[in-house]
Amino acid sequence: MAEFPPEWIATEYAGEDVNHLIDVARSPSGVSTLYEATGGDPSSSPRWHANMIYGGDQEVIAALRARGHQVWGAIGLYRQPDRPLFDAQEQAFLAAISPVMADAVRRALLVGESADPEGPDSPGMIVLGPGWRPESMSPGVEEWLRDLPDGNLAASRLPTAVLAVAGRAARSATSSDDPAEVAVARVLTRSGRWVVLHGVPLAAIDAQRVAVIVEPAHPSRIAPLLMSAYGLTEREQELTRLVLQGFSTIDIADALVISVNTVQGHLKNIFTKTGVRTRRDLVTKIFFAHYEPRLRDNERRSASNRPLRGGPAAAAGSHR
Image (cartoon, rainbow, N blue to C red):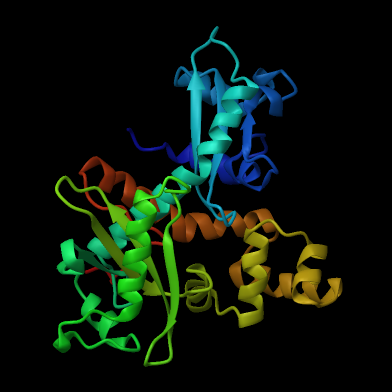
């Protein structure tokens, strides 16, 4: 697939229009058509005119929501002019498969970061084969394993948490109840850090294989980046995360148990530090400064069949 043109991304995050990805992600249904969003007149939308240049008339956007409601991406489907509208049954189908697709995206990004890590805090991955024996390890995963409570690689026994997650992942792969669920465990390491373990079943011809991914339990990947880039306080970072999630001023006040005036004061400080004037400007700046480089990097990675990565792009000079 060709790279998205810069003007498409700018319009998506800063343009005045309907059916934006972020609006669909925040909507109750998580699915929206351009026809419905424009009240039956798609030609009134700049988005429709841009789509028509590429040959797409009807558009439906579906947010890829995991079962915990986290959004891991979106899918856009298009039909040529004079083709039928996307009907209610098709939209319901997209909503139904959204959690499965979200889980697939999340797993792919975790596996990609583990297979091609960018730094010491990158996820680590270990692949277990028959008899729960390690078959391969990503660079640096040994340090994660040794830091787990009973980690002792010299004893030729994997930490209990790794085996437990691997067992749950293998069971979910053979279960007919909910095969899309992924095994997750949160563990306090010897060094006092919380980590998250993900168990991911892998397709194999001759035997069941499971990948266990270990990563830091960051409350948000963007938080440390915001602190270093803009000098935001912990409270300002917390408030910024809520703004990026679409919380209103009143919602933020309720969530943080502070007054509306205090929220507005924090917002003023955040705007000053980041050099923006509005919430929309803040969202746009965060995306273009920290996430667009990752989007462009993944476009190139996809074209060359290399592992994809999630989270903000690494800072200049920190690549391996």
